[in-house]
Length: 371
Image (cartoon, rainbow, N blue to C red):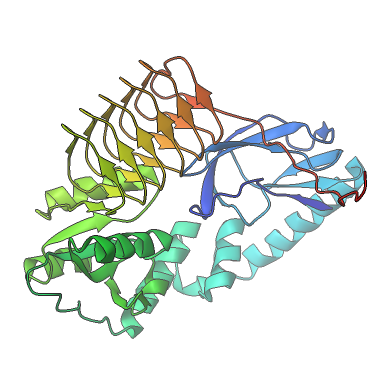
């Protein structure tokens, strides 16, 4: 039995959505055959079979899957697959008969988080979301949440939402630019509460952020999350709560004449904005991006490093660009488009589409001296 994993180096995503199965459950597949399609915050990936065999699905279409866990299993023959499936069915039946009704992913998640399934669900079928909610509630009851930092006189006090890698980027930019002071971090992952990132305390989840703003603990917020759907949702929630968004623009960025920015943008090191370019709200633009003259960027988008556009390019809302992407002049990329790393865009892409590239494996061989 061999696990089938998602072939991604996307360090900003812990999960993805299984968009489609291209090979049926219990079907025979060949080595290298594309069997599924997974969407992360940065790209859409084809999942190849690592070897030939018989395929057993481990997730359904539309499910959110952890990128470190198998999406399927491969067996050398149909008999081995059926024997495994029968054993799993027997084990699930025993578990269901001896405790609360729960999905298999929920049982695995409960083991990871140390949640007693008997305390969850109230008689209904227990899901992963219910398990995680129970874990968060338990953590809340035992964690003493810290207060925000006092800030620095004369500088805006900034709250950062998201306590993962993006938070370190935002805090570093604010410190380098001297444009604000990060005084608090919020994250809905309760396991991060009462921790800190670069000396800034994680003060709780989104609702604590709303309370702290009402109490005058900070002046504006920045969303440090790469997933565009989450960025859009959080921006709407912050605006609804009356919380303004601030920009975090690295001092190494080159901003030409006539450039205009909205609010809530994160601009990492060595980005370039050509004359007359207009940037919307709440975009996360990674290092070494370059937008040539008279570009228009929408809102709630995220990019990898080294994305380059020519002049008169239009980018819509909620766009996800991977790493090392080139866009020719006059191209328009519609809303909700996702572009895989290494793509060269020479024609416009309609809304709701994806530009994909197959993963190419690089083989490392010993250097032949004297050849």
